[in-house]
Length: 421
Image 1 (cartoon, rainbow, N blue to C red):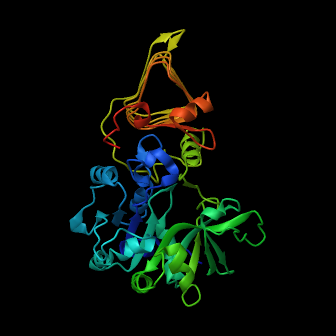
Image 2: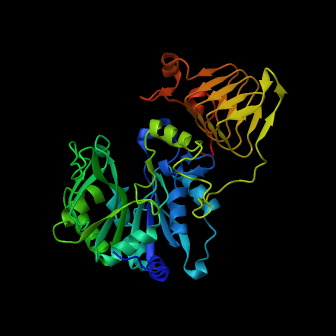
Image 3: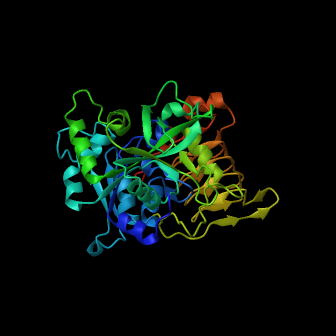
């Protein structure tokens, strides 16, 4: 398929409304989503997960975005209001927050399709030509303009963003079978026995939860699904399998533009994947480049002083090695190694933090040891506490993942929960 001009892409992105489904709890993240929705979970030192799809929209030239919220959305709403209110309404640009309002039914959203269906009147008012539906809980960089152009050129009614995943991981995704032209012939939502790709017995083609619809086609399918008894009102479980035979559904492979290989994409939906994906960022040349000025990740960040490292005695030296340390942090006569510290973290004298992810506003007391842990926002770790060295002891007071990552929250320490979650 021949590449289109920037003018063609900019025209269709201007006629696109993006909807970010940001109402999920993300229960596999355990206590990290006890007080916040999954898209509001901090990531990467200064961002939140939702900043990645929002930044992709802005960088792709999509300036009409609705953020659909539901579960414990206060911190998510607060973050979007503070950091994403710079678009100009008089130019038809907006990032709107759409809380669950029971506009059509007196119930909360039953599934991903129902979340869009219950906001059909708002979508009609904006009157886009195309609707781009995004999950609000994945980490990646993607030019949606290329995907929408592919959708238009291929004459599709619906296009599904997809990527190759290991066969043993595919059980958690919608798995697709496609023909030689990229048309979707089969779609199995979270199958027990995923169908491998032809010629690749260890790989499957998985849906990213990213969809492009022609507006009128979307309306027809949502209304039909709402009237279907027994439907779970989900795009993957109900709508996609139903339309495959009678409609043109295309698969759009997510690849790196320069290399043509699988592009970076992470589902940080478990404690182990969240911990690992954060620590990947401190590598010398990580797959996700947060220093890329051609595709910046935008966020709300309060004004903070630079990070500070104090004391230089042999037994009391403030230093961080092989780590990322955000603004407002103070490393006071302590050692931080192979860790990621968010904003306003204080690590006090003689403490050691290794292989850990420390969220904002944490205070690590003197002589503490923190290893292979995720410390939630607002924790006050008392002097001398050891975390991550004795799994059996940790499991009595904290949460320990299958991969051995210890999660500590203010509630577990007897601290007051941090209100600005």
